[in-house]
Image (cartoon, rainbow over all chains, first blue to last red; front, top):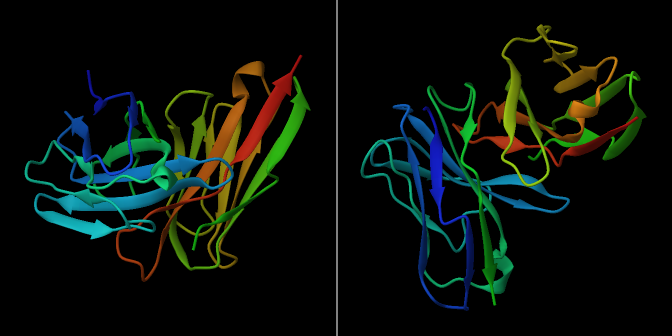
Amino acid sequence: EAQVTQNPRYLITVTGKKLTVTCSQNMNHEYMSWYRQDPGLGLRQIYYSMNVEVTDKGDVPEGYKVSRKEKRNFPLILESPSPNQTSLYFCASSFGGPNTEAFFGQGTRLTVV
Amino acid sequence: QQPVQSPQAVILREGEDAVINCSSSKALYSVHWYRQKHGEAPVFLMILLKGGEQKGHEKISASFNEKKQQSSLYLTASQLSYSGTYFCGTGTKNTGNQFYFGTGTSLTVIP
């Protein structure tokens, strides 16, 4: 089944404790993105990647890191999480860049206390 | 650069029509529309790539006015299953491969 898989689905952590949210797609898609969703603000792009070893900042990259060492995986790293990073996070992938249909993972609800 | 959607929320009775608008301050080269049910991931509805393009998906259709940097989503004869939050998404010219989602429109269809 074609899908984007995120883990974990829920995470509660403490300020400053490094964490990684994994994202994997099995559709051989070139373009992968991370978004955060906050009430009233919609989805905002954090980082995106056009291909292996190619990553770029989105609209709200501060406090986040990503890597794209393999085509299928695009982990999101929070090296020192803060409470303002409490949010719902989505990973998405698409075949040919931002002009093609995006497939979303099921989301990760992160709470930083 | 985030597109602005209007209205923010709308409540319809089954069978009524609705229009959701998406407006950008930047020149666009694509507009996507997605629907998100509560607690779920957004699901793709359609994409418009050319100015003047119109597309349909069952009783849901959309238009793209490239000159005005606007898109509209039309829902006709609404059904209970149409309830959810609708997002437009835009690829803008001169911003590389970034993608911007609108702030969302909450649509509730009641019997």
